Length: 304
Image (cartoon, rainbow, N blue to C red; front, side):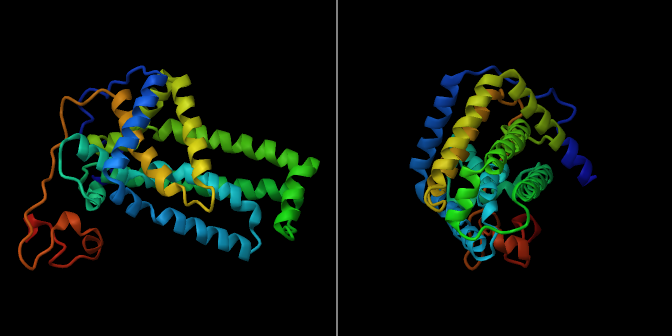
């Protein structure tokens, strides 16, 4: 039954989400809204995004230490493929602020309360699979171009890429394949995760709504994809530290983009208010790690 709910959701009998036609001005408004959310909640957003520079440094060390330098760019570009899932916390913070609710960084983990959490996990797994396939194809393209011999150094690697016919072919083919992956991920995820947080729909409806949004706004969505790619590229310099600002801004902006593309539901999501904290007890919604481990303190108030 849970698998069926994850695929179809609890609103399968209700009308499908209505998709609007938007323009470039809506992208500007979405970005402005994202920046405004970030400025209002900077501590929360930066705290959540500390993982990005840390991961970037770890990846850089692994690449330089294990002679897999050719995968540096594919790994950096691959952040965009899993980004829609990684930004779930920012969607939730923007959703709560829009609803006039109290917001703290702990609320980013309230996706655990979403009735669509099964569908969210399913789509997140799909993006992870696409990321793994992209990395495997990128490595295969490099091996087909230069063989199994690793690059001796960074200058040697850059010389291979930019001064040889095989390197030029690698750039063209690699970016072409990467573009196809980016288009696929944009089509299935541009509004799917915010929709899943906002309504009790399934993974199938979320993906179909996202595809319909792209089909109804091809030029605008292409521009949005270009904006995301450019900002993520800028945020990767140096060593991904800029992602601590770029990722939360894009995450918040994506929520505002969703609000412009998809009309509000006539059946608003029912909130699960936090229970007042009792002496010696923890609030369940604020204790994400404890909730995973279980125990008395981590049980929902209704089960105590």
